[in-house]
Length: 116
Image (cartoon, rainbow, N blue to C red; front, side, top):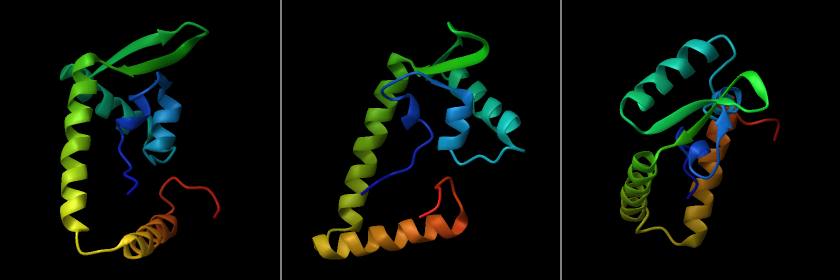
């Protein structure tokens, strides 16, 4: 099953804050405050590293630290275990039907997806 997770944009690459905000489905009015508060907390816990972008003075790139990658891997394992337990009684068709229903719910909320 697909999981949406604010930390995943940093899992395999550096990303800038605007991309992070878009991926985390944060609206433009909340963008600066919410993203900054989340990043301050993640940085204080040693989970991310922020640095100025080499090609743009106002852009800050964010990447997972080694500790952040370890925590994300542990979270992914825990979520996979929980998902498997939750979905144990569903066959592949039932899982696909559930996934489609959840995606429809997310679209109805306007949570970061474009037009369908």
